[in-house]
Image (tube, chains in turn cyan, red, blue, orange):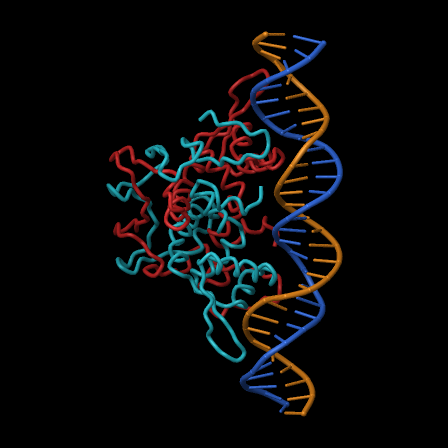
Length: 170
Length: 170
DNA sequence: GCATATAGTTCTGAAATAGAACTGTCAAAC
DNA sequence: GTTTGACAGTTCTATTTCAGAACTATATGC
């Protein structure tokens, strides 16, 4: 599969994965949320090769997730800061961190705690229904095709299949 | 970086990324939540090469995210179903879908809608604070080191740096 | 016996990544 | 006025991973 195609698929998850679904990109975004802004900062924090870092930053800028802002003129230097579209990735980041906190910690406990400024307490993120406010679990959710669905509505699975494609039995 | 190392890092996000942070794994998990259970089902829905699919399924089983259950005896056949640890990935999946619904849809609208069985309405997932119930945004959250922190507590950034490592200026 | 279904494994060429060195600009230090 | 160092990249080669296709194996149904 060419990963370019992912962004064309009638599935919001596939499209999102096409944008942020690789290891380095996710780690770069973690750094962004930890207030890293500059090339050297990312590079030394992550140990990523400079080549890949340059490429990933460009892609994130192209996607409108980061904005490249000059912070000095001679020599020209830029910072990478999250746009609103980038800031909106926060629930994804928190969900990832929380799963790790739940299932991947060693005996020593969590590496990082999160404090909510509004209420002052250390918290966990909880995902709730926008309509009734109840916490969500997979089993309580039923999916059905929306206006942007295509060809395999029950699942919104990709329509382009490479190898011995069949229609899904759903 | 050897991706094996990710799982050792004092950062829940890095550890989680080490487990599920690649494109195919995320897409396989999407299929799991859409009730796909069998090798051929994953393969034809995703168009992934059989080789990679076998490898990724093995890894997910090793990680305790999927369980491999026999469903017939001759020939031996197995299904892959989500464990509780796997089901707990649901908020990550929903957060990814929701970001895509917000930022990656075309003019036709969302490919897939989600209905909450409890309240019967189509909904969006909202991430709230476990303590006060208010919706969360990046700016309202302050991070600080927990018991499992190490070496660069303010950020929980990796301690192993490969290239010209420096300490972070935070 | 032959085709089909399922669940893989094996092989080769293509693509992505790692690791290191190099370029270029400017400021400050010597 | 030349050297050093910070910063932000680019270029190069070797290694690793992935894609695409073919092959193996077991059993059922015709």
